[in-house]
Length: 279
Image 1 (tube, helix red, strand yellow):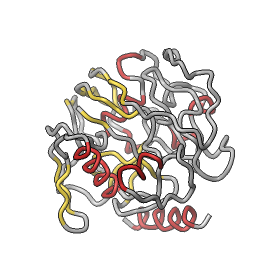
Image 2 (tube, helix red, strand yellow; image 1 turned 90 degrees about the vertical axis):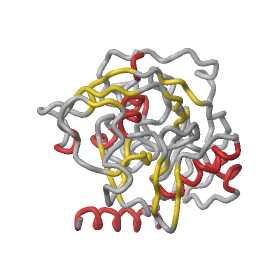
Image 3 (tube, helix red, strand yellow; image 1 turned 60 degrees about the horizontal axis):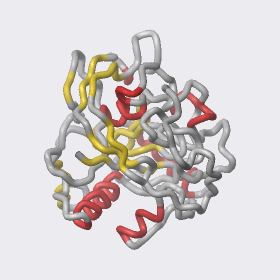
């Protein structure tokens, strides 16, 4: 707990003050500048079974045990949610680094859940989250509304789903600068426009680097043995929420598809955003 608190404090101070082949895409040759808006369509991810986590000889202890996980089909947003999308739904924007085509950030987990509910209502879908009080949330994962991906869904999609039979270190490549904005290649301290680097086999962008992404799960140790549609410790079981993907401020180790991070769900930072899924 002391370690989590210290990391959170340092990050808060710093951020506030400071085929697998590429899929066919009509915009692959388009130069995407920081302020240019690109439609954040939802990409269908065909369900399947994969090895989640890292083998015993690789990765960190919290990425083990590696085990077989099956996930059902779902749709996932092509990019992290952008500031334009956030403002259109919520009417505000307090991101640290401003631009319509930049990922929204400085968003807590609970605010990401509120956005998912608001978007669901706007489109006539049933909200997934019931939010009472400051930070009391229950989830109805059978609802047809938008939500954050489970940790298993996120990793399955980042690895390329069933479209990819190669075990890339990063989402879509073993060459990190092809697919990820991180500490080693960032053009400035801050977020970068979505979709400027290569996508993975599913056509998903920025799943490594740019912004860390909130996922649905409370943080906890991986269970041993095969699982189907795991969703973490459950609504009552945790102190911190899982973050995935690494960010513009991360080292190459933290942008790996298997890498896991966690922090308190009320945390705000200029390197943390999210993307959504729906059934």
